[in-house]
Image 1 (tube, helix red, strand yellow):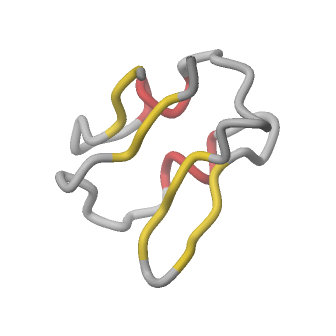
Image 2: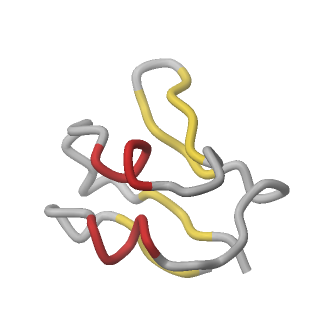
Image 3: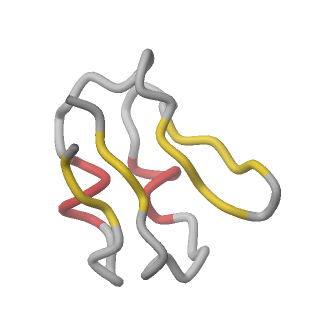
Amino acid sequence: MAYKITEKCTQCGTCKDSCPVDAIVERNGKFEVVSDDCVDCGTCESNCPANAVVAG
């Protein structure tokens, strides 16, 4: 169950910087989780200051 970055995202990059497996990429000005690379650790969700990352 990979995480998703919602429309609440402020593009701060904290999720990308905190991901231990580099599963978050920036495409077309938005961050997204690459589900095949995500290890479901929850680091992105717990570090997002905008609460824009959700499981699922």
